[in-house]
Image (cartoon, rainbow over all chains, first blue to last red; front, side):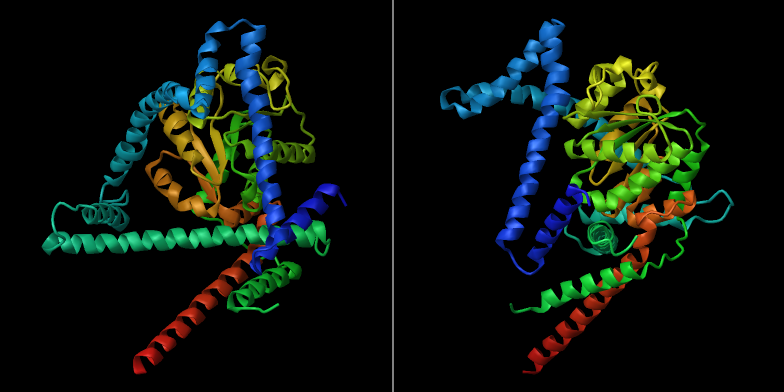
Length: 204
Length: 269
C-alpha cells in the first residue's frame, strides 16, 4: 500500500473522531490540513505567480514597468508599521478602484440585465400551447421582488404578493438545503468508499 | 464513553453507508436532460478540438469533484479532445494535474501534445481577463515549469478565440466569474461540472443561456458515467446515496414526531 494512502486513511479516521467529540487527535489532523493548505498555497503562489509574472520578467527580461506592482505590493506590508500605515491605502485604493471598475459593468450585465431578460419569455410555447413554466417564473420574480419592497406596509395586494413571494423563497431555501445535504452526503460517501476500497481493501 | 442521541444518528449513517457500499449493487441511473446536453455537447466536438478545463475547487470537495472530473476527462480524452488545464484555486492545481495525468495514462495520451496543465494564477478575475488577452503572457510556463512555447499543443493558441470553450469543475462560485468575464466579454462557451450544493446557484445561468451545460453532484457523475458506459465512483455510490437520503428523511420524520409529542405533552401539563 502506498504511503499516501496510509496517511490519507489515518487522517480521515482522525477527522471522523470529531463525530464523538472534540479531541487532540482531531485537532492534530485539522492543524495538518490548515498547515499543508497554507504551505501549498504559498509555494504555488511563489512559483506559479510571483516568479513567473514578476521576478523573472523583471530581473531577466528587463521589464521595468513591473516595478510599479512590486512597489505597490511592498506598500501593503506597511500596515505592520504604525507610522507608515497610511501608505498601505495606496495599493488598497488601486485594488478597490480597478476591481470595482472591472466588476460593476460585468456583474450588472450578467447578474441583472441578462437575468431580467431571461424572465421575459413568451407565454405561448413553440407548440402553440400555454407555457405554465414561463408564467411561474414571472410570478416568482414579481412576487419575490415585492416581498423585498419595504417602502410600504405589506397589506392588500402588496401583502398578498409578498406572501406568495415568501412561498417561492421557502421553496428555494428548501431546494438549496436539500442539495447541500446531498453534497455533504456525497463527500462522506466518497471518504467511506476510499476507506473501504483503497485503505482497507474490502471492496474493489 | 457515553453515547448521546446524535452519536447514534452518526453511527446509524455510518452503518447505512458502509453496508450499502459493501453490497456493491449498482442501480440503473436515468440521465437527466442537463447531463444529456453536456454529453451531447462534448460528443459533437470533432477530435483535436481544444478545450480549456478549469479546476476551481479545493481539496475538501474531492470526494464529490473527482467522480465528476473523471467522467468528463474520460469522455473528452477518449474522443481525442485536447485539453488545457488551469486552476483559479491553488488547491485545485495539484488535484487537477493528477486527475488529468491519471486519465491520460488510461488512454495512452502524451503530456504537451494531447493535454497540458498550465497551473494556478491568483486573483481569478484578473486571471480570466488576462487569459482573454494572452494565454502565453498569463502563463509563461506550465505547472511543471516547461516554457509555453515548448508545448506543441499550445502552438497557435493565443487566447479564448482558439479554444472551443471552457469547462469549469467547481465546488464554489468561481464558475460565475467564467460566465461574467470570459463568457460575457469574450463570448466563450462556458459549461460546468459542479458539486450538488452549487446546482441552485447556477440554475439561473443555465436557464438564461449564459451557461451552456451543467452536470451537478454525485448523481450527475453517475448519470455521465452511464452515458459514456464507464463505471466509476458515481455509479458505485448511488445505492449508498439513496440509502443515506432515506435515512435522513426517516430521522427528520422521527425528530418531528418526537417534537410534536413533547409539545403536546407540555401543553397538557
